[in-house]
Image (tube, rainbow, N blue to C red; front, side, top):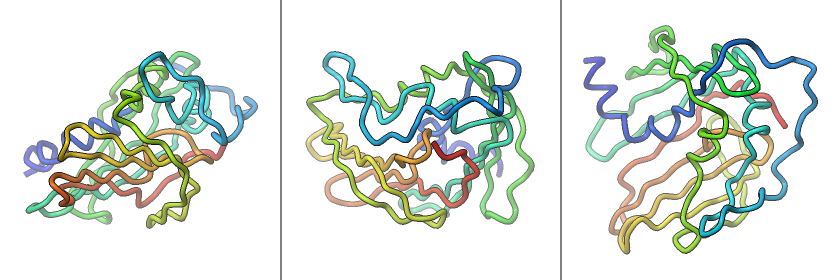
Length: 196
């Protein structure tokens, strides 16, 4: 059953498992790089990312966690929790757990290492296929001022991401639409990320 749950959520979990490499902890007194009130400079041909890697690092000290409700058409919802278990200037490690209910999630386990810059690049989209605007987004974890990214992957498929301006990292909501129908959604239900 656990394997089926993990397989069913793999596409959405790939957006999340913004997990990182390195040992140690970032200093608790490290000054905030500031809220994402403007977008960082873009790489040529790409839309700007919503955050710098420094903002992502700041929002995810050891112990920070995010929990999502993952919905796919024709399937029962699956909850995914990710907890940061290591952090350094270069990267981090994130342990995760998935299950059918928020109250029945198993303990987080394993640790997926990745560099902070790689996490930032999960939100790197082609400029010609991406529209970026700003709007609030309501979730079970709260209402967030967001950068809204609408990414066209084909003429009939769109993925919309809402990235909170006050805490960096994975989006607070992701909706995939195919031929005008919502086919999957990843919605933030709990977060202990540090505010910028």
